[in-house]
Length: 301
Image 1: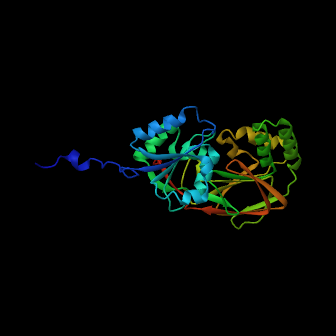
Image 2 (image 1 turned 30 degrees about the vertical axis):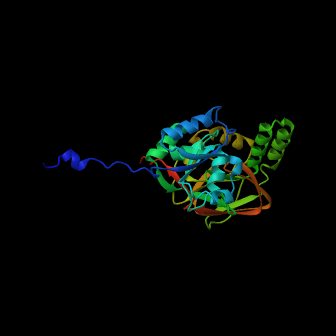
Image 3 (image 1 turned 90 degrees about the horizontal axis):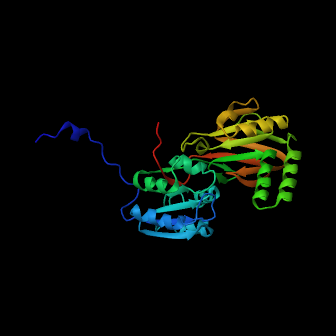
């Protein structure tokens, strides 16, 4: 019998990204922002439903570069935790090791959303195991230290330390840090450039990875220069930052870069993926096109 036209044009079934008898290492952080009581049991149930009965769950406190180097016997590393947990896993992961599934268990979940859209973690896990594709994250590096969403530099980032103090229940420390941040603002001690352009003064510099805008791959990073001249500029941009409207603000300049230099006569306060950092005198930014392997859902064009 002649094959039918429907049979000739029928699409091929999508190949699962992992072998049938998948061995999974699961890093679980019960203290993450959106992880609920009972999520560990729900995680085990979801893995079993997806056919991943061979799994080992360990606390995130075990994470280290040595720990990940010993994890090559597994086919995949699944991470359910906050934004900091996802970043640490991506940084510690061996570039030729098992791919990562970074589930949304934090507060903002910017990186997981770039990988799996708005899916809640059980649906994201099922989708990644069934129809995900192994690919590589792009990233940036600040003096060699990786970030996968955004790096911010300048006095306004000192407000992150005030936020951390409030989270820790230390309101007086938060107030002192906020006052310090405002005192440092508009000192105009920061200069920066994208690529090999001339150095220019700035109140703050942002370096954005593709995941910040919901993507995974790009040929470069976004370079954002904040030229705020008074508190009103800072307040306006801060309010607008909850949407994409900040991109059109008169005090914001945006271009692309593969490298960047940021210099100051003193310290350079910073945040890498929301975590406070301090650099001294100079920061060299470099684009990294081949970061850790991850399993992501195919992005619609």
